[in-house]
Length: 313
Image 1: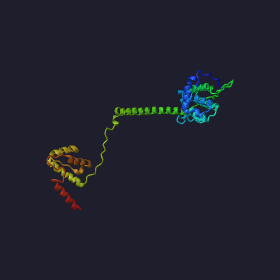
Image 2 (image 1 turned 90 degrees about the vertical axis):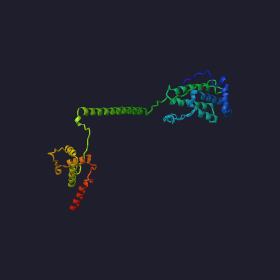
Image 3 (image 1 turned 60 degrees about the vertical axis):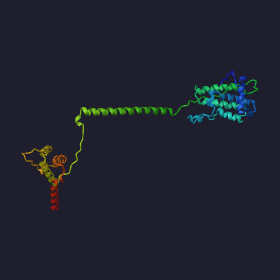
Image 4 (image 1 turned 45 degrees about the vertical axis):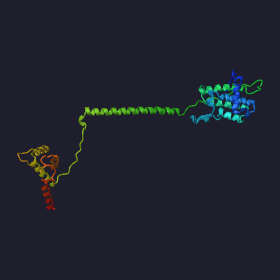
């Protein structure tokens, strides 16, 4: 919609106090050689003045919408423009008239007002720079008409830009927080239930707890030859050490009748026979250095067993 004409600036770039600044800028960019018209040189003076303003840094180069993650920028801004691009075109002769220069300068401000929300920092900067430009641009033409037409600038309503991913990101963050809370609560409940179960088993049902579980594998049954060998070892051990007999009887839980030891090996089960054998294997007889048959007195017995087996064969 049309905007009222802005009031004149108290100080413009074309005041005498800025004459030396204008001359220095023109000499630095060789403006007198590239621009023949004084009006176009004044257009350059306005642009150079605008570019030196600290608040105008956002307009010096084209908007890098990819780096700024603004994918909707090309959709809204069909004809982008910036100070740097305008300066290059002006000095190369691509801007032939002050009117064309004014259109491109206004395009910079129009794009900024269209893309940024009203009241934002860039929106306010754009309004201020636009007012300074219009005030200086009135002095570009050396011969002004008697009645200058009022300046109007069409400002399109600023569309409300809504980030389509904002709601989704908010939902994801909320769900992640809930998941983390549930994981912590689950870990706490598991630890609490485990402690409660251990205390219950320890206090209320101690008979259900297994302190130790030993596995005993079955042993091979005794053969006839092994039983005979066991009898001989018992007899020889009893002759050497009477105390051994008393200890053995306690191991197999057998009471001695009278003074004579009579053990019926044939009547013992394999478990008892293994106990006797283990006792003899582990018993340390101080009267003999040989703990197993096959040495000393047992050699005769072993030899007799061998001969007996050969005779049967």
